[in-house]
Image 1 (cartoon, helix red, strand yellow):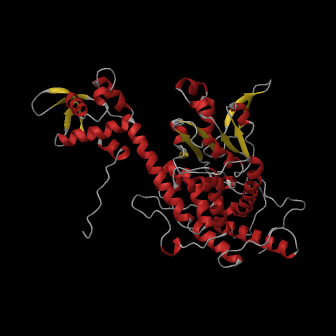
Image 2 (image 1 turned 90 degrees about the vertical axis):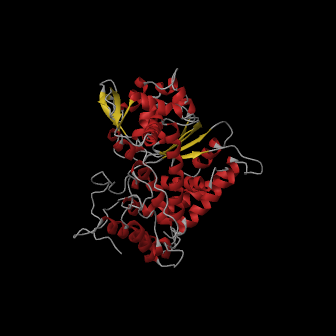
Image 3 (image 1 turned 60 degrees about the vertical axis):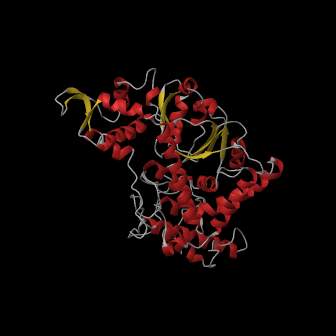
Length: 476
């Protein structure tokens, strides 16, 4: 396949960052059309680009130079690479509850590619030096590393939150391995936001932040580093620059923030960062768990060779990845964060598409469970629903009835909330953000007291703590 528009004389073969039109960002890096009219669908353009690059590689190989042609390892057929990738990329995203969570049937048997072998090799390399908390976490780290080599394609730059409860949990060792395998690593310990602003260029590095607990470890310290938190939050999504006044003329200047980032530290990071991250909860090695010592002189060259092979596989797929909307098992921000990882798995094929979605479901569900345990407002909503149910689901309950019901649960925090248990004032404050407030109501016994109507809670219950329907009986 040849380009219908000739390449300008002297133009570089390697695409300029960003090499394609970014979702949500009109235009692209190049003003040269890739195909002639009529304009094909975006995924067809990506397929044409991929095939053109593959054929170009084949021509170089025939001439005795460069890498060999890009072929499908399962069939040896050059064209089947394009067919396999676009078959995955062209699927309609399904995120509605109750819908399939991944490829099924024939789609589930995606032939493996060179990428599948590289991901498996990378996974083994990570496990050689670090004991990961689970196989899902190991898969997630592997896919995150591969996704850093396709940053021009993504609309969102997922954070990797490597956290642990104490020292010696393997957090810094994992950053060592990431440093030698990700795209253009920029490792920092307690760098200033201004330095990081100026390090994120048109070709962004992969930020690696060690000892993040020194930045966000306490409320007082975190308050001093709000600018850093804002940088990490805005950099999760493309086209979210930050503006600063610089120079003697005090000229407003925009700085890029979009870049993938891994942060390691003791304890959880701020909620806004954790919500944008693939969370890896490290732990100390147990008896019988062994790893190979990491020695830079011996191990770094091997990891660099693997990194370069991974980048060589990923670069021709940049255009295809930019238009992919993979089937996701989660929704909203979790889907934004995990989509690059799942897209990489779909392009690699083999068992990786299923493993990526399994890791996404398991790890996202675990973090949601943690949020419900520590989120008092959400816990309060669920407990108030239980109080209404215990009273026969009346149309309204007085405030003192709700408080008595909440405090009666000895396993709930309400009896010891504050200095003397949950009060009417504290209840009102916890419910304020949900738009729920008490008012004077007349009850069936003729009394008039302050209380809440049940229908005030129904929308918040459905949004923040929906009840899980029990599974249907077998054979029912």
